[in-house]
Image (cartoon, rainbow, N blue to C red; front, top):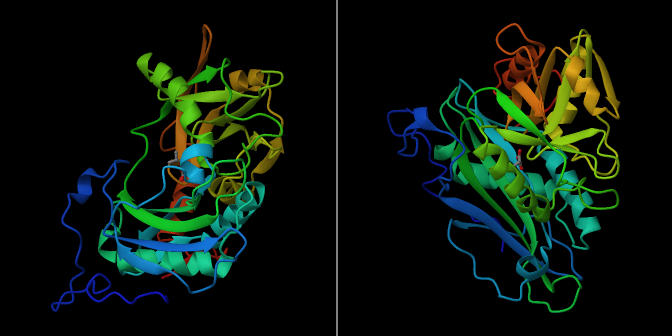
Length: 354
Ligand code: COI
C-alpha cells in the first residue's frame, strides 16, 4: 500500500484561515503521554527490504503482536526520537531527521534487522507529522515528539531475527522534560553501558535497566543519575536519557564516542554550535574529578534539549554550578532552539520543512 492521503487531519486551517489545534491546554505541556491521532505502520520479512513509499498512516491504536514476538521476548528493537516545531508563520520544521534515520540503520545492523532507507524514514516521519499537524504545539509552547520504532514483531523462539520486522512511528506533543536545572547523583553501582554492549545504539533495552537507579535517586530528592564507565568507574559517561557536557572557561568537553556513549544528535549539533561561537570543544575521556573544577555542566538530548545542571553529588561531595541567563548553556540552548523553531536563520541546513 502507498501512503494514504489523509483528508481532515492535514486540513489544519479552518475556513477563517486560523490554525486549528487539538483541544488540549498547550500551556501545561510537560513530558506526559498524550498520543496524537495518527501513526505510521509498515512491515517486512526478515530476509526482505523495506520498500520506499510503502506504508500506511492509520488511526493511533494498539497493535496486535504475537506473545512470541522478538521484541517482547528478546528485546529486538530500536527507538528514535525527534521533534517537529511550528514556526511563527505556521510552517512546521523537523530537525535533522536523516540523522535519526542513519542511527536507526546502524542499530538495525547491530540487532540483525532490515531497516528503512534514509529517504523512506524521513518521508514516513513527514507523513506522520502532517497527519498530526494539529498536534504540533503553537509557536513557543513545545513540540511534537516523534517516536519511530523498528521492532522484531514476528514470533520467534530461538535467538534469531524475528520473521517479521515492523517500522512504526507515533507522536505526542511535549513541553519540557525536566522542570528547572538538574541535580544529579553519580551512580557507581549500576552501569548504563558496557564495552562491547549496546550503549552506542538506541536499543529499547538500554532504557528500563536505568529505572531503578533513577527511582532511587529521585527518592533522595535528585533529578536523575550520572553513570560512570563500567570498567574503571573513574570516568563519566552519560545521564540516563541524555549526554553530558562540562564547561571550564572557553573549553567545553563531553565524553568521546567510544562504544558506550549514545551518539546524540543534539550532542553533535551542540558541538557544532559551540565551535561556531568560538569555544574550544573537546571530545575526550572525562575523569570524575573534572566535575569538581568546572564552571558549568549541562545535558543534551532530543527530549531534554539543553538542560543546565545545578549540582552533582558523589558520595558526600556536592558541587554546584552556574545556571541561568548568563551561562554558556543558555547561549547554546538559545541558538539551537532558535534554529529548530525557525526564529534564527538555519545556516547549517539542519531543518527540514514538512
Ligand atoms: C530522547 O531524548 O529522544 C530519548 O529518546 C530519551 C528518552 C528517555 C525520552
